[in-house]
Figure 1: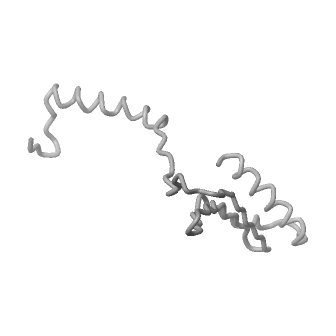
Figure 2: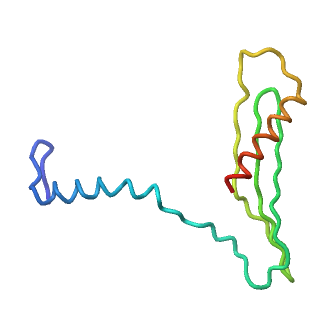
Figure 3: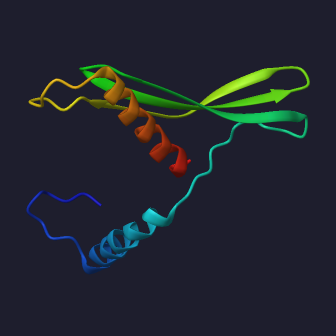
Length: 111
């Protein structure tokens, strides 16, 4: 159906669009599980977290390590980074690393 920008759509199209728009709220419930290529030969699975901090930024990475009889695979599950807050007094790197560990734990709970 071709319409110019100022033409009104017919009631059937308008009704279908409104239904589609209303159904968008159900997308919040949509879950798509990650496929991590694990199979019956999996011998060991472990989660690995790495984090680092500096005066400028901090970041955390979550990896899953899957060991089978013949190979080891590592998959990225999640990566997060943040710019360090500015305008604050000088903060020790130790404090940033502590904050980074807290940041990592929060993301661990989500995985």
